[in-house]
Image 1 (cartoon, rainbow, N blue to C red):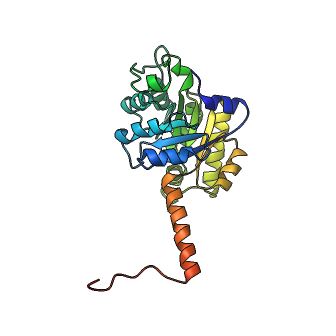
Image 2: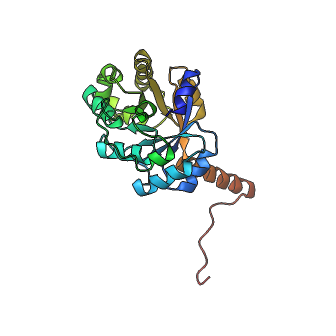
Image 3: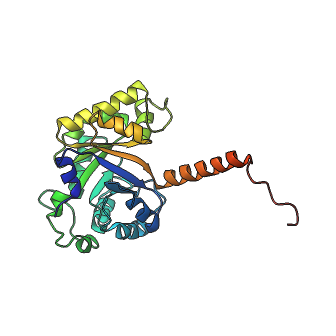
Length: 267
């Protein structure tokens, strides 16, 4: 059993990831048709739960992108359940220490490499022959998004079995500035830029991958030059809002009309 993303990286290419926050197989299917290398179903902040995640994974089967899932927390229940559903990569939020990274990694793999319990309910059908060979296929990404994680960055990055670091710039901005900076993407503040580049350097020094959540293609392309080899550019809810907003604005401009008025009384 292999993970196609490992071939992408081995060829020296970067991975373009998309984000799925809407609990809809149809939306996931649309996103899968756009050319992303991978898609991540957001089980932490997304408008979905496991009952929505499962049919989304089914809709994505065989459509090209490798599917990640972000779990709600560093909890073995969620990590193992999302893997059993068929995710080939897990992004774990709020990993703040080497010990926490070791716990997370142990949930990802079967013995003797970890403590994952065997029961690949859907994965066994999605990937024929699924078994302990999944240990080499699944990818474990720890999110670096707090001041504490930055303090322990090098130790986290050196955790055996960890495949990558995933930067959440919104929480990272809040954390390292002690709340002075508002959350957001595509940061230019020196302290955030320095932190993001330091994370990429720590990943590279330990032979693992570095991923950054971005708000624009321009910023994502720039991040590749800092050493990131996986970038997320937007997601389903954001694309929907931006495209709808741009269309409405364009129409209002062309027709010189404002927002539609309220209906007249009695209509």
